[in-house]
Length: 153
Image (cartoon, rainbow, N blue to C red; front, side, top):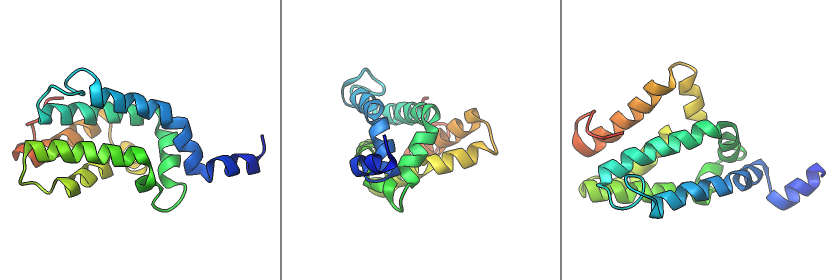
């Protein structure tokens, strides 16, 4: 298959990467919507937030190169991806439900910025995966509780 055929079908590298990730993202979305707690419904918002952050980091670790391509192939590509809007809305709802006084919309973007593939890869060059995961969980806990160890996970 030629390069021209690929670009006619997918538009750009981001479109190709999004298509490659689609079924994996749908699996994670389905787990968020109807899977067992704590990732799925039925758990407290803080528990669901911690579970989502862990699950998304697992997803990111498994597919880092393709996620990076989907997010950086063109300026702003990350924010045009339907999955990003889904993750953002999910986090905003959890944050708002846990603490209605928070600016949940902004804080959801802030948490997701830590999970950008480019950021994740750069940080992991300087620290181990366990420390990255613990740091993201601690920041989320600070948002919800004012305590860095307030989230399970």
